[in-house]
Every structure is written in structure tokens, then in C-alpha cells.
Length: 526
Image 1 (cartoon, rainbow, N blue to C red):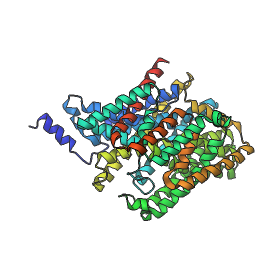
Image 2: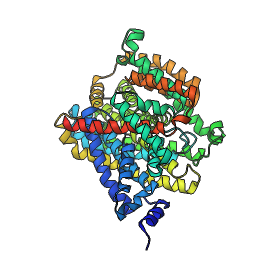
Image 3: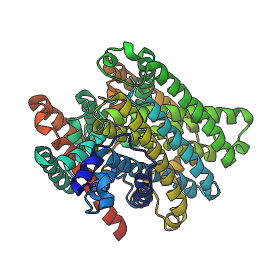
Image 4: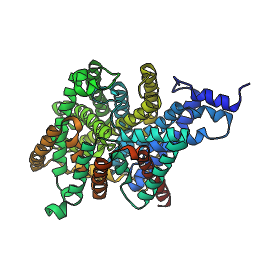
């Protein structure tokens, strides 16, 4: 008979773990429902988005340490990754994809459309997860990309398992991250700088500072203007073209030659085309379910479907690229841009709201799946065994898809309870007000004017996404974060990254965990 240590060793060496084995699926579903409900509560009361990847990782590591024979199998790091994946997906989809959309309709007095909007969010979320599963580790979204939160989660899981020097370094980073977050210092941004592309992070930091101190620097509040949105439109459109060129060139590009990628350029091209087709088809279904086509003539209804599909595909790519390079995903900012352009096209209020909810559902879980796949890629040996990597990736996608659907179901189950108490995400108020405001021709001219500098910056720095991240900084009001990012850039240039290895992930993890639990406690006390 095997001893406990022998069984533990056997479990740790397991590979090709199925997503649907009962020991992973059942606890995964239970955790997903719990995390989805908690994250919905937090964003409804505080407007923040908790880092569910790290939360899922901590839960998985704690389960592995329960002194019961049935829990020994969770000592396997890949199984921990699978539990973390489904928990993370449920939290992101509930907080960012479903609740925001249904709350917006509630505020507009369109509660009868909430159920159908929930189905639309399921479609958008599911398509985005399916596509990142197909296109991850291609020239456009390589596994060797930064994906900072994914690195932090993998490092936390490995350090928790190995202990020793790596464990001590992680603990040091965790402590500093928690303390720094308590004092509202930008510790997560500092950690990300030592993982992500330094030029891209510099662009983000400058944007954050210009937006945060715009009144002192320029004499007006940039956040109250349309400058950030215009810059994002210009940078985003150029980034889209650059992404298409990258996919078309595929392995011929210099960056691709240096990387061992498992998704060919032909497959990536087909996946992007498939994404556009699926999003257009999903938009047609959502439009039919919500009955918005009765409010528009045939030509405008066709235009709405095409615009919703195109907007979703572009938003998915832009959010994913920003997430990969910086760990930030400006999903709501990018959704606002496509919503604004939809308003300028003359769509009525409810079709604009349905468009907004549909587009907003595609980016968050795409980014989250990228983070989780990065975690899995590291834990599976960084692609050393391609067959194992591809199989493990498929299992993760299955659970991410399930977690995303569970998150939306949680929203539909508890939406009335929260909405009746006036508990809803703050961004929903913004979306609802904008959808009902109507078109303003002068707005289009202003957006196009400021699109020019955004496009120029993105062209100058190429595929490093500096223009998009600079625009992201302009869209966010967090100057202290910008200062922290730029100071970290200077430190990295002077001292390098070696002294921060593992500690950088600890900073991100500490900041994320403190933010989650402090927000949870605050939301329960409100």
C-alpha cells in the first residue's frame, strides 16, 4: 500500500488532467458560483474589479493543504491551475460582463430585456474565450508575451509549492504588496513594470500622469473632454491594422522567428475571420431576442448587426493586446468608444444599450483567459512539451467557458435582489446616460481630430502598443499609479530586473489579495 507521501508524489507528477474529472469539475463549479456572487457584490457596491486569478490560485493552494487523502490530488500544480481558471472566469464574467449590462438596462427602464441581454452576454463571453483558446500562442498573442497577472499567479503557485528561496521572495513581495496597498501606493504597477515591456509601460505611465494632472498642466480637466477617447480611436485603429499585418506575416516576422509558437499564421488568420463571423452571428441573435429590430428600418438593422460584430471583434483584439503587454485591460473605455460611434450612427437608445452590453462582454474574459493560459503555460514547462501544452490549454478553455457561463447565470439569479436595493456598477450609470443622450455631430469632429496624435504615436512605436497604452492612461484617473510606474521604469533601467524576480509577482499578488478582501469586507459592511 502506498504511503501518503508516495501518493502525493504520484499526483504531483500527473499530466493530461481532464477538465471534467469529478474531482476537478465539482469543486470547480462550487467555487465558481461563490466567486461569481462575491465579485458581483463587490463591483455593485464599490465599482472595482477584484483579481480573481490570484484568489482562485490561493483557494486551490489551500485545498491542496487540507490534511485529507481526498485533497492530495490538488498538490498537482496543473490541477490547481484548472481550479483557478474556472474561479477566475466566473468572477470576471459576473462582475465585468453580465452585471454591468443588465444594470444599464434596469436604469433605462428596460427591465424586460434583461434576460435576453444576459443571453447576449453569454454569447459574447463564450465566443471571446473560444477565440483566445484558438489564437493563444500565435504571432499576435504569443505565450511568451508579458501577460503580467498570469506570471504573478504562476509564480505564487510555484513558490507556494517549492518554498525555499523562491517562497521567501514571494512572501517578501506579498508583505510589501499588502502594506503598500493599504497605504494606497501603486505597488501592483511597480511589480508589472519588472515583467512587462518597459517602453509600453512608459507610455502608460505618461498617459496616467497627463490625465491625472491635466488641470495643473493644461488648465482643464482632460477627463471631462473627449481627448482620451479620440486618442484611443486613432491608436486603436492603427493597432488593429498592425495586428492584421502581424498575423499575415506570421512566422516571417522577426519576433516570431525568435519564438517557439504553436499556432500558425494560417490558423490565426482563420481564427480572426471566425471571430468576426461569430460575433456578427451573435449580434443578429441578440438583436432578434431583444426585439430591437422593430425600432429600426431594415437597412439600419443590418448596419447595427455588422457594427456590433465588428466592434466586438476589434474590442476583443485591442483589450487582449493591452492586457498582454501591460496587465491592464481598458475594456470599458474601449466599449465607450464603440458605443459613442454607434450613437453617432443614429441608432436609438435601446439598440445602443444592447450594443454596449454585447461589446462590453467580449474583452474581460478574453484578457482573463490570456492570463490563465500564461499561468498554465509556465506551470506546464513553458512549452517544452508541445503536445502537453496544447492539451492542457484545451482543458483550461473548457473550464474558462464553463466559468464564464456560470458567472452570467449568477448575475441573472441575483440581479433583481441587488438592483432593487440600488446596488449596481457605477459604469452602468455612465453607459445608460450616454445611450439616452443622442448624437452630437461636433463630438465626431473632436474625436477624429484627437485620433490623429493617437495614430501617430502608435505608428512610431509599432507593435509595442505604446499608443494604445498611452491612451489607456489618458482614460484612467490614477496619477499616483503613473508616478509609481515611471519611477519603477527608472529603477529597472538602472538596476535591471534580477533583484525583483519573484518579488515582482509578490507585489502584484499582495496588492490584488488586499484589494479583494478589503473590498469584500467593505461591501459586507455597507
